[in-house]
Image (cartoon, rainbow, N blue to C red; front, side):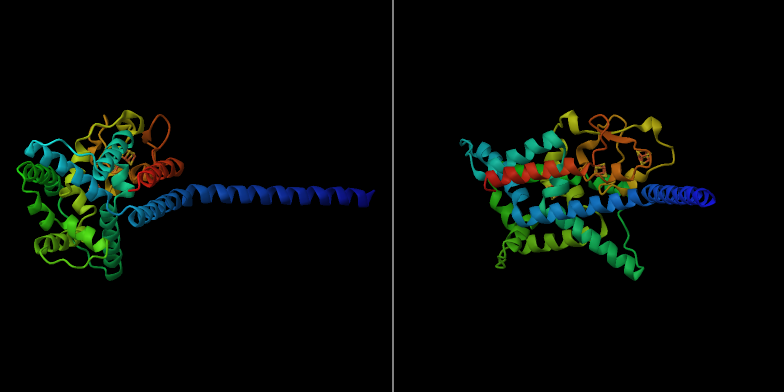
Length: 314
Ligand code: SF4
Ligand code: SF4
Ligand code: SF4
């Protein structure tokens, strides 16, 4: 009887121990989830984006320049008064434009080779600055705001040159052309001196400021910024629930964007999803209750774009 009681008590004690162990484990994992998960999730999301960028860099490195060539050819044809030719460039232009109207500037954030180079140089520069303890100055916010209008001037200037049949002047002097030649392992760059100097200047700028070329000078980025976007995948910031002092989403944004409450300033957004990842209150949403940075959604968008490029032999 005594033995029986002891056995029962022993079992009870063991059960209590197991239960408390399980509860401890659950508590620990809950705590871990609370404290580690957002940072880990942000890191994983960034690595995921880098992987997608590498994939597009290798598989479709020249879409950005091909798409812009289509815009230039369209203006040239208009200027010359000849019918517009349907080329592979036109198809690439239409694909990225339609994708941008549907999903915002996903192409810029995830699939553009030159945008990826902007990111990689800036990241490398940040790493060097951290290691050496020396910090490069960033362009002041006000100046950056003014400079971001430069890309529209560049766009108008380039399109005007095309309209007046001066297209060759752009091709030889364009940093994009030099980058595309280098990417294709074509190192004969004679006659591209201005393009080389401009490309070097751009690369230096990328080390100072995140998305330097995209924000300030990219004519294709200017076209994307002017496009109308369908509302389904818009990011919405619920500003009424934001503390006055919080700017975490803006501070992490590669293009320094503070999403307006009405979401009307999203033309510059490259859909990297960092803002949704860092917001401590989940105040940034997309399409109802989604956060706009779900990995499966980004995977679907990247897969869809890759498939389109593959089918169209881009
Ligand atoms: S802004 Fe221009 S260079 Fe930057 S990602 Fe978009 S198309 Fe590419
Ligand atoms: S951080 Fe947010 S607002 Fe900024 S580019 Fe990325 S998705 Fe757009
Ligand atoms: S990080 Fe979140 S809470 Fe802070 S300002 Fe941005 S949306 Fe609002």
